Structures are given as C-alpha cells and as structure tokens.
Length: 213
Image (cartoon, rainbow, N blue to C red; front, side, top):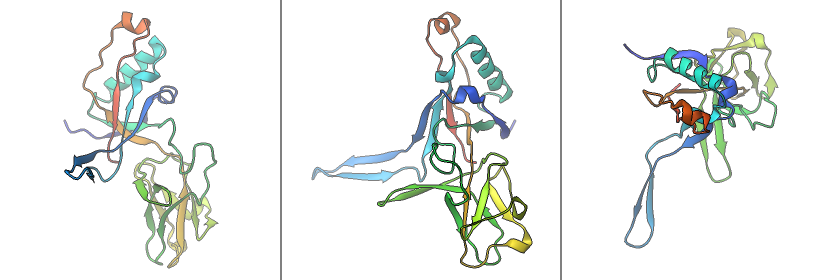
C-alpha cells in the first residue's frame, strides 16, 4: 500500500502542549589551524515534535491511539498545529495581507505559492507553506488588500490563484497573510503504553516529523 496525506489535523488541544520545533543538520569539521569548516546538510529546516508531552489523561491517550490507527502508523501524513509558529507573522500579532512577500506580478502569472521568510539583517530563510488554514488567507497587490472574490487559495497546496481580470500587473508586489499547519507523519511504527507508568506520570514518546507539503 502506498502512503499519502490525510487532510485532517492532529487533535488541537493536544498539539498546543507538545514539545519540539525546527531541526537543522550541519556537518562540522575541525581543521588543523583551529578553525571549523561548516556545511549545511539540509537546505531547509525540518520540524520534529513529541506528541507524548501533550498527554494529560487516559482520554488523551486514547485519542492519540485512535488517530495513530486511522493514519496507519507512519503510512499517512496529516496536519499538525505548531504551538508557536502557526501564523504568517508573529504569534502575538494579527494576520495582515502584507505579512509575507510571495512574488511579483508580470502581467501574466496568475498563481503564487505561499511562503514565510525568517531572517534578520545578516541572512534569511524562505519556507514554503503548503497547508494553510482554509478561509484564513488574505492577499494584497502593491500593498492594496484584495477582496476574497479576486483570488482563491487551495488549502491542500498553498497555491494562491488570481481571477483572470485581476492578475497582478508587472512589478506589483504580491503579499499574503495566513494561518497554517505543518504537514507531518508519525515517526514511529509503534506506540508503547504502560498504563501504570502513565498513571504515575511517565509519558510515552510519540514522535512526529515534518514531511514535504
């Protein structure tokens, strides 16, 4: 059986208490002159989480077991709400249509992929956003917010497509604001539960790993 993706979200009340975040892999070689040679193994960060840290009750545990079975263990991916990074901007700020640049018009291109840029004065990293929350996406062209009738956004791909009569003009900056989920899968084929240990406060590890949107 070939795995795929289920457009369902991991139980929200559990994801808000999980631990985890972005991981990067860097090869570091210590040189004879005392310096280091560093090379990034991955182009982008990959997020890992432990859903076990969000379990507080037997009911929570059962919900995770049921969700695990429905996904076929590691077979199918699903949506996960990062407890910190789930908006186009900062988590303490409202979403606006000018939060993130997603392209520039050329008078012909109608589709643009959602993205989020992380950075400062020294460097930046652009993250492709493929699982926006339906109904949360707002868009601006040249700083002017667009009505919802002017575009559609596919929540399964994060592609924004403008209507034919409002395609962004050449040179016009296209920006967007949105809420989003992280596409993940279970990173284990088994969940080991010792009920006596769980009742004593020992939480099982339930790893999740980010997959391509």
